[in-house]
Length: 206
Image 1 (cartoon, rainbow, N blue to C red):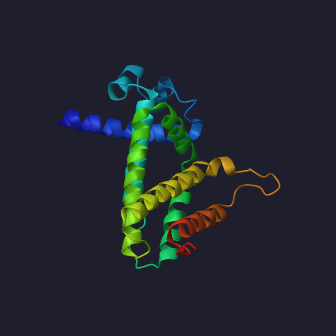
Image 2 (image 1 turned 30 degrees about the horizontal axis):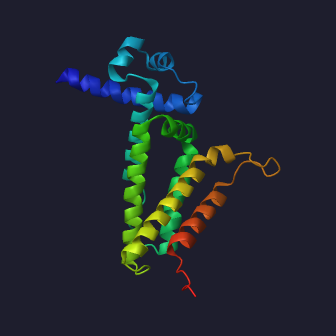
Image 3 (image 1 turned 180 degrees about the vertical axis):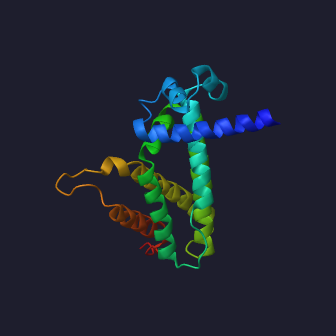
């Protein structure tokens, strides 16, 4: 039992070290030797827990996603626009604090089928929840054609938002005359994207 507890503690400590080192040096500069030295372990011990750099970064990402779900704002009886704004503020600020982790995620999305499948599953579930919310608010019909359209539109908005969040750190200094990107501006864009694309009543077709 004590041996098992020690392994759990060591694994948790490795994740904390990996998260810190990702933000300090970035995914491309991260190596197993680097992680072992940062954790105060011999390389062989590190391989008992994780087989590769990608494995440990995926574990950090799973922890990040889990904590994001646990701590995301909910409840409070806010109106629609205020709820959208609160959710987007949370997402943008979180992305701004973890830029290199999100950069690592983008690399793994291209290179690792497991990460790509995980993101696709999360976004599919998210889009279904958005459609359910639209139906609950009476903002859509419930025929199959309309629901298919909304699911695809919700996925498109999610993907656009995700791209913007991943680009927050790269947008810093995007225009040297204006200096670093204003996060409040990013939040405004996100608010506008979500409200106008999904919740603003659409005019009837002629």
